[in-house]
Image (cartoon, rainbow, N blue to C red; front, side, top):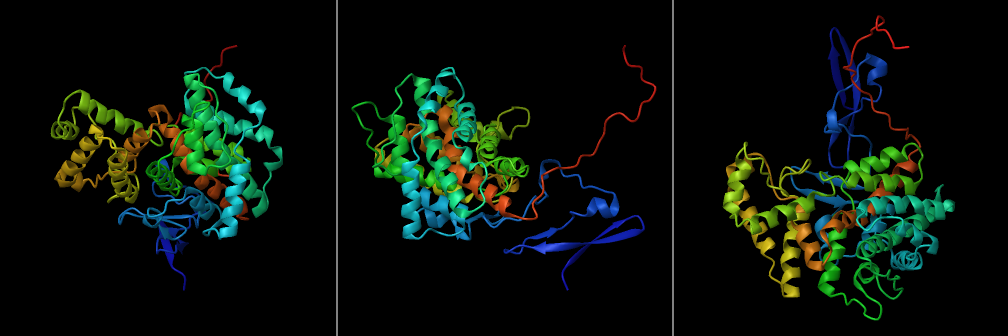
Length: 427
């Protein structure tokens, strides 16, 4: 007999089915709760609400586990290939050699923007936030590719995914160069995904950017580790917008806006600012941690703690090693990495952080890696968006194929004024 959950309200009892996930997670199915009882649940920020069933990403926050389509995230570290992982997330399996070659070819073929789109960049002031440009230009893509508004089969989603994943790096690099008053650099069809992005960012006419293999692997891995993370704020936004049957471009543009927030995609910027504050203020890590523990100081230890992970964030564990390897290979000594390592050591030995389960998260080291590569701080969240795009596409497509999907429409608990029929309105 299937497991049931019993809800007792006054003298009445109601049974609701329990769904069991692949990894043993249990969820009480309350989709008929209001119809049967007249009640709704109150769960601000949806911390205890599963908004969907998904086969894309599994997270066990208590054990520090992250898997893409069943594959542990650690397995991608040895031979990082962002394009391969993008295919895995969207289509559910690692690509065959033929599938990979075809998809990589599509990415190369679609890297250029329509020449008409280049003029849009001129309408933005040099000081425009890159995330604002990114969202606007992804929406603009829908105007240039109306044939991809309705996607119903795997060939169509492959074409749309290839265009978005390829063009987002071109948009990002053009936004960066526009902010610097630099000429736009066209994509090079001879370069692979990450190298081509860095070429468009940092090459100059008659002087090609040379991408070190260590930089290539570090950026591939950084993008992979950001590629999906279950029902986070931006992914949930993509699903909510997509539930109205909005097209893929509009839904992903909305995801960019959600990611823009400092509590989501902008967190690694705050980590870097914290590390710089410690260095410039000549505060020791020990002194900073002491201030962070003082409830009256308003000092926060950025990059620690996570909404889901209650042990190590596996992405942070990987990136800490990548940061050290990258800086060693480049022959650089970044004092911010030394400060970060010392903060981590102190916090992991302090009962205050241990009892509260505050461990380094993915944002703690990602900024140091991007800084070493040469990515400016105001482009950090854009890099997050490039990495997260395959996950957004995968979730949009999964929801789109779900025949039982309905438009998202949460309820609320009204706490405003009661009926007032005596109020007089001004004439």
